[in-house]
Length: 213
Image: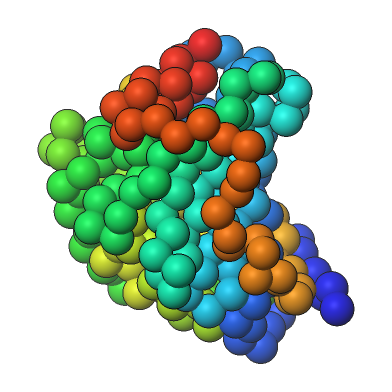
């Protein structure tokens, strides 16, 4: 079953606990986007999630898998023939988010509708620039749990539909364009094969190089 909720359409949608969210990615500043990821797809099923950022260049990109039931908190990096992964834990951030560790999140009273979902607002203060405050929008009308426990947004009680992140010095902005009610196989959240295991420092270095091309 596949039902899509386009962000071009307004209306209230029933809460779903399994499916996909597709986001557009935009970049701040003067950056070359040739190698950078073009889309973000989040596949979710209750408290499990796969975050997949892929570029249009040789299917290169970054994949994070969150599967607390099987204690999988993996990061996968692909660039042409390079295939590496890192086994993380529930107590640490996914590689690449070091610049955002220690953000401060303040809820506001603002509301907005995105993809037919009622969204709440929060303002984020960055640890490396206390004068820069950025907004994120999230909804509690999608029944997914604790999707962000290994990200800087672990305090968010809901699902982010418009948000940002910094990987190294590069600012990413994610805007949901479609939400799909879809059956997600448990294999989606399983550990992948044919990747070489490396350290967090090594995979972070590869990620920073990709986003700074």
